[in-house]
Image (spheres, rainbow, N blue to C red):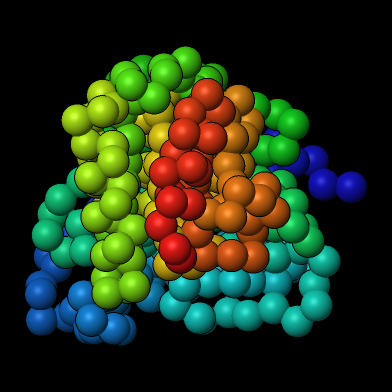
Length: 270
């Protein structure tokens, strides 16, 4: 039986170590080291170095678990539990020195997210949650502070929404055009932040009221989705199913506006 709280706090330290590595490398980072995975989808040695650090530390923490990682440096083979790792979520932001960018680590058992940790490097904020234990953020600048997270209570007309722009631009254009046309001017406002993990954490913290994105990987949203649910919010895929862990789309809200956002999305033929 895993002590989820103890394990979560250990993962927080691993995420912070990876974040410290990323922060240090950013000081000497050169655009010459950037590679293209696909059109407008970038990777660098920093992503890979962070992933190696995280995988090595998680293997020590839980040798019996497998891995799903963005850069594919580790895999899984029918293990009961799997770590889902994004070593640098928001790589394009990182390249341009534009906040936010983060480390995201989740522990998945079947279709259940047990642990979620997201460390935002620029603001030095570590968001963490474990199943049934609530969601929190720890800030270490000056005095160490831990705050419990709770979603907002805004209705759709006052909602601040994050509508991201995935790399699969041609397929997603009809959706994002419809969302902006329908929501812009009829909600509080619309933002795009460039990090799925942080958009989810911001929903959990009540900074955003809702977030939607399609064509993303499990590593992008797994940890943040648990944060939202443990903070009292709601998460589904674009079909409205709460069985979202194997898919590539996420709607996360304070729960109050979930149906509003889902209805708007489903007006487009996906």
